[in-house]
Image 1 (cartoon, rainbow over the protein chains, first blue to last red):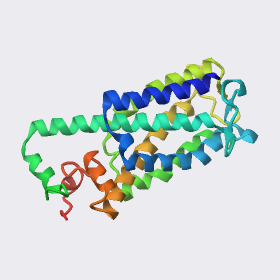
Image 2 (image 1 turned 90 degrees about the vertical axis):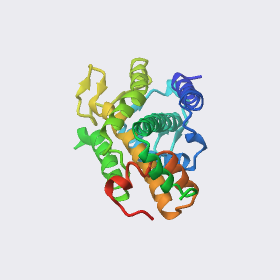
Image 3 (image 1 turned 120 degrees about the vertical axis):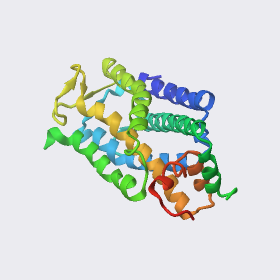
Image 4 (image 1 turned 135 degrees about the vertical axis):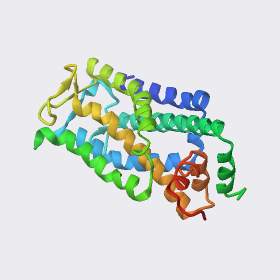
Length: 124
Length: 134
C-alpha cells in the first residue's frame, strides 16, 4: 500500500480509537459532528482543489505515494480521509478541554448547578 | 498575485467562517486559551505527519504559488498556517451547527448535543451575556 494511503488509514484508526477509548467524547455518536464533517468536506472540495488542481498545483503530490485516485479538482482521495482525522482530532481535544473547564467550574461553586439544571429542557 | 495563492485561500477560509463567530454566536475566538491549547495538542501530530510527508517525498510545494518563506527550510509558512486555519473552521462549523440547530429545534437532538458539549452552556454563554431565559 502506498505510504500516504497507509498513513491516512493509520491516522483514522488512531484518532477514532483515542476518541472512543481515551477521550470518550461520544462525538462519533452525535448528529452535530457528522453535519459539521459533511460541511467541512463540502468546502474541502474547492479549497483543497485550489491546492491540488494539476493545472496550477500549490501542493504537488507524488503519484507513487498515494492511491492515484484523484477526486473533484484533482485532490487525492486520501486528503478527505486526512480531513476526517483532522476534524475529529480538533473537535475531540476541544470537547475534552471544555469538559475539564466545566467540571472545574462546578467544583468551584455549587450555585452554578442550579442554573444548569434550570436551562436543561427536561428539568426546566 | 501568484505567490499569494496559498495565503489567499487561507484568508478566504477565515473570512467565510468569521460570521459563524460574530453572527451565529459560536464562541471559538472568544475562548483564546482553549483554542490555543486545542490547536497545539491536536495539530502537533498532523504537522509532524506533514514533515514526514515532505521528507519522504509524498508531496512538495510550488515556489511559484507560495511566499517562499520556508520554516526550517522545509515547510512553507502557509502550510503551518493551514494547521491553524482549518481547525478553526472546523470548530466554528461545529459550534455553529449546534447553536443553529438548538435555535431552530429547541427540543431537538442538536439542542441536546449543544448543551452536552457546552456549545450553549448556560453558565458560559447566555448567562454571561445576560440574555433573557426562554
